Image (cartoon, rainbow, N blue to C red):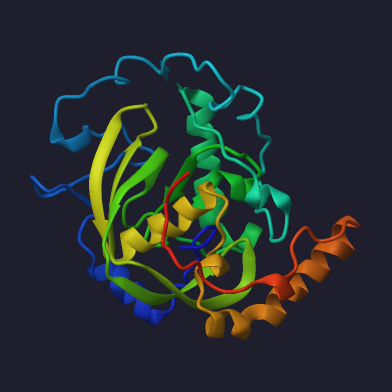
Length: 276
């Protein structure tokens, strides 16, 4: 959802989150835990994949092009700050990760802190993607409970959607990169995904309900898609002035011309695509 997902944590959402089953379930078994932030790595797909348990670093084969993030791409300095619309960082290409080390774990930890810490960061989020804190890589963290110490803290790296439900459902979303804006967004009710956890171990799961929505919101960020891109024209019209206000604030703060203009938005895409 938005900081990704902010989803506003209204009473309806809190009830939804409280009633949800554990986040990840496979077609062959019951729910399985994804790695918690402050716990050891979980066993992906309830199988015997133990890679990453004996070493703090797991790396994929070296890339032959610039598709994978370099050490410079993964560099960050705390405290992290939420990147606000219309900063071009939110539309930039996000590289895949192939080094799973202490730096990546620390980045995920810092992202959770930003997501939860409303007092310092004025956020109230259920999820956050790396580009939203200025790091353009394929990394997201989320917890549909939206409260530190409750629910499940999930870290996903290099996620891919390989199947989505045909049925689309509307639900009110917000986004930490769009403070104060809430509106209905259409999304598939469930998705099947592949990803890696914080150790580099592979995961293949099906998400539905609130976890599916939170994931899809954050996954869109990794593709450079923003939540108003998924709005219907009538819903988009209801937030157009608020988008203009964010553009104006960006120009006043940075002295730069806004790279996007709310007047040019034409409403949701005809085809729901997750292609990179």
